Length: 318
Ligand SMILES: [Zn+2]
Image (cartoon, rainbow, N blue to C red; front, side, top):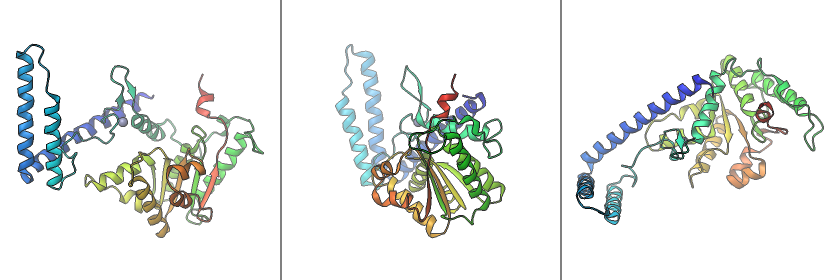
């Protein structure tokens, strides 16, 4: 990973953790003011823990009574709920529940979290040396092999697809159908094309928002929980380009509904969307549902384009 990207990532994650800590403090204060019964339970738990610690130092072989601690935690959750708060309102705040916004998982064997690697990819699109643009697009990175069941080579396929995407970006809003869905395995150049389109559209004076599906759900969730409302980006941009559909966290009754609402609202306003996904049309149906999948792949509303071939990130590796 590029050093500049690494540094920016580390700074972003550090800032996020600071924001989380502020939010945690703000919530404790809010609960203290508005739900004194919860605050009293919190206080009691604090003393209980202090007491355990003292005993652990003084009594040999002392076992922390975990059942008592669990009970105290349950009481706090119940009291929060009774006071109209989410049960987990006082638990650690984190944008990514997997790494807790450290960027890493796995304790001793430290590994980069998925959220970290995704963000690194996003940054590499903008921080990358020449940036990703149609001008910089080099079809020669795609091999001259003919994917099974295809009449042309992968390289020729990309040449045509690049032309089609460039035409889209050059002629928007006179494009029909209005939306576009690129699907195929990872490493075939989808993200690169989305970057090129977003850049060209911006250069032409349109607002083009390129967001990962992961961030779409995060933005919506933040707005839902009243943290910060950044959803205007998603609802109002002339063209919304959603990268890596299918990589967002799947929360029951939430993810599908929110995506469905976003797609419908934008369509009813006549605003365009471009999607990339590693899922094929069958997998889209399985992951989401018939209703959303058929919206995404409706060929009267969306140019559905399949990419085939070899992962170029692998062939480029030494
Ligand atoms: Zn993470």
